[in-house]
Length: 53
Image 1: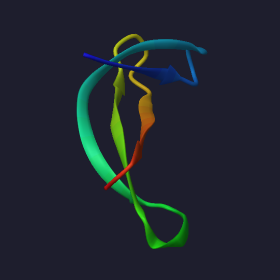
Image 2: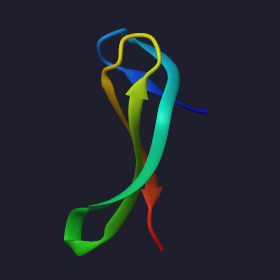
Image 3: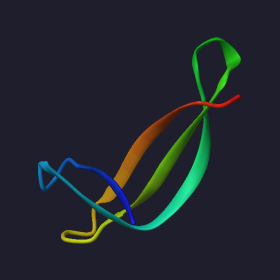
Image 4: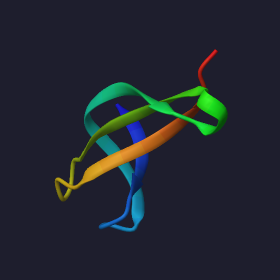
């Protein structure tokens, strides 16, 4: 499983059902990110991965 920061739990935790998404970055570049839900509380989690090449 992917690990990300949960704002509600205020700790790093496991991400349930992670999906890779593409978001727009500065200057029209693309950035990859992971989105999913927190295993403990069910809040949506988001982790920015890096620059898409």
